[in-house]
Length: 103
Image (cartoon, rainbow, N blue to C red; front, side):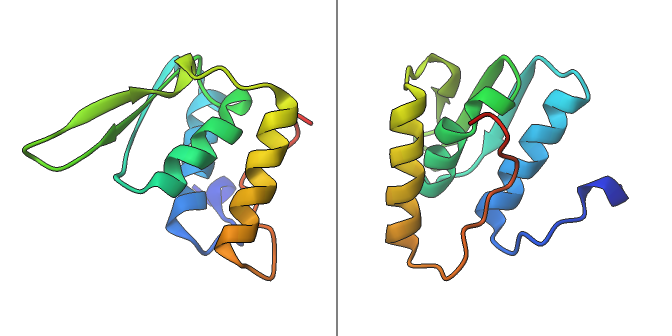
């Protein structure tokens, strides 16, 4: 699993990195389990690099739901804006980009 080595420190971005790996292994469906809205934002932004069908399982044991990320339609311009906005909110000194060559 050395190919998954990364400088990514945040769990949010590492989840997206692993989701990118699922596509590389030719999986057609990926399910990411997280209740963190940051993960949802990153999945929307990086969806072009993910499997054809991407789901996010969110909620608590009493209120679990699956979000169909692949059904959220967003243009590339909006993706770039979302990523910039997310970066601003995260107030990070460095932009963590798990797998980004679609732009």
